[in-house]
Amino acid sequence: MKMIWWFIFRSLELDWQFCLLHLPDTLKLEFLLKKYYLLVVLSIKKIINMPISGKIHIFGRTYHFNDQFGISFLQSVYVDNAFMEGYIKKGSTIIDIGANIGQFNFFSYSYLSAKHVCSVEPIEEAYRFLKKNDPSSVHLAVGISKTMKMHIPQTTLLSSFFPYSDKDRIEVVPGMRLDDIDCVRKTNIIDLLKIDTEGSEYTVLISAKQTLKKCRYVLIEASLHRPNSGDLGKVISYLTHFRHPFIIERIGRQYEEEGKITSVDILFKQKSAYATDYER
Image (cartoon, rainbow, N blue to C red; front, side, top):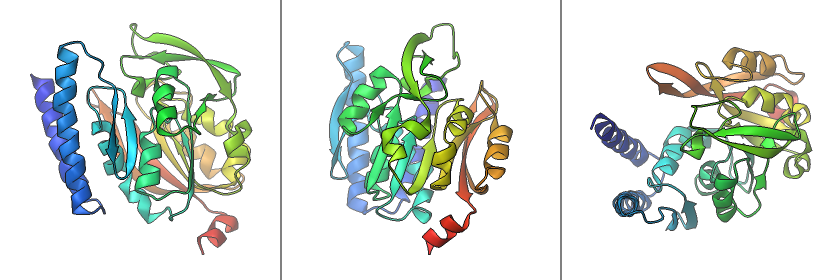
């Protein structure tokens, strides 16, 4: 019962924050109506053991989802990242590492008006839906090994290089350095590199030495109290001492579990003359 009340409160909180976004009121209303319609329909489907994946048309695009919460997590991505419209111009190029089923990809196109998004996801189940949402997406784990072992809990959102519980499912996936991925390597200017990899963000960074030179902004979900390849301090040290150093531009949402802050979103900006000139 406690979990149900938490979900209701969190859902209403998201609704309030969502209503403050820079979107036409008609689109906000349409989204909220479809959100609760899906929550009811998918809950019934789960009870009677029917498939709970599906698709829905919102913001002029088709969105494919794979869990009983429908577009609820997509809504949280909008709320948590809407501030990026103050940094990312229309027609931008975005690299999305740890894309899951494409929530940030969808947000980038529909809210930030990005021109091109390269989304990368290692988990097969999530990638099947990501590919439906963006056929140009890439099925890889980003790191320094050619194959990597992923631990997958009940939800693919928390998939990681690190164990979550003894009930995790294990999946061995192909790996590649970020510098070597075609859609990244062939891009000359990257307006935003977004990294959300549940603990392996430092490994992604050290595989991206050439990529980082091309980035104006880097948005990272950095680790605190969770297993990781390099925690918040190590991530900050690496980026601020990089050959083309970055500075902390903004601290975003904090994520908690059992009363502890497990991770925090941090936006970094490159200090170089290249980044400054491009802004002009």
